[in-house]
Image (cartoon, rainbow, N blue to C red):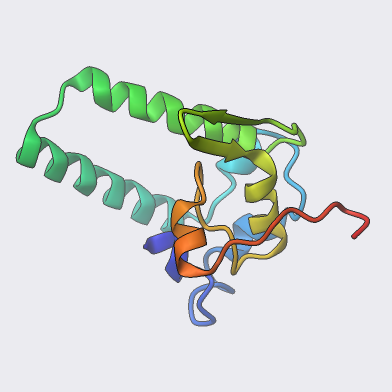
Length: 132
């Protein structure tokens, strides 16, 4: 929800535009972590709240939290490279190009790993090459 709110005209120029100055991310973790401090603090606070709620509701082992951080970090790095990484794993489709389109169109493709909610909410766009 927070990433969906960041393109709003009241927030975008002050917060998320900092991250989107890089239209074609190439440097992996450097580009992934290139965020405004307010965005970093809000994202971590929301993530921490989600972990606490999940743990309180259904219990959660520390290994699950560590695995989640590792998966999110690895895929955030890949999402910010020129790599054409894509795969389909048990119906979960991942493509770096989908996130590249988010950098080129900040109002589209909000999903970090999968585009399920973007397809459902009408914010998904297919990849267009640099020449298109």
